[in-house]
Length: 247
Image (cartoon, rainbow, N blue to C red; front, side):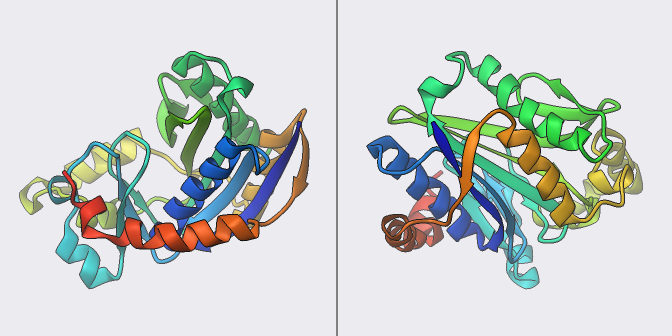
C-alpha cells in the first residue's frame, strides 16, 4: 500500500483540525491514501481534548490578548499549548486494519516512529505507556488517538523548545499557583529537542519523516480538491462556539 506524505506546513488551529478530519473522512471512503503529515501552528494555539471544558481549561481572555487560537480536538487527552516556534506536530491517518487492534499496542507502534525519528538527531527516547515519549524520564512528546469509521487518527507533538511561562499564561492555572517552584517542577518533568541538539526544525522534520516511512512505500502529495473543499466547510465548525464550548 502506498502512503501519502504531506511535509511541514503551518496552519491555524482551525485549519489543522479541519485537515485531519477531512483526510480521515476521505480515507474512510477509500478515496484518499493513508496519510502522514507534519505541521506547525500559526498563530500559536491551545487545543483541548474532545471531552474537556474550554472554560475550565483555557484562559480565553489571555489567548485573545496574545493572539493565540483555541480549539477543541477530535481526540481525547488534556489541554496542550502549541507554540508556533516551539513544536513539531504530526498526524497519521490510515485504516485501522494497518495497526494493532489494541490501543496500547497501536500507540507503541506509532510512537516507535517518533522514537526512531528522534534517534536520527541523536536523541535516545523511549515509550512511556500509554501515550507519552520520554528522554531521561522527561516527557518530550504527547500523543492522542481516535478511531472512527474504520480509520485510526493519531496526532502528537514533538517539543522543540519549551516556554513554560507562556504555557501557564494561556492554560487555566491561578496566578497564586504559578511560582518559580511550580515552573521548575514542570521543567523537571518535561524536556525538548533543543536541550539535546541544535538541529533545525526542518532537519528535525526530515528525521521524523525517515522514522515514519521506514519500510513503507510513499510519495509526497498535497491535499486533493475534495479534501480542500471539506477543509473549507469544516473550518467554520472548528471556529464555532457550539463546537469549542459544547462542554
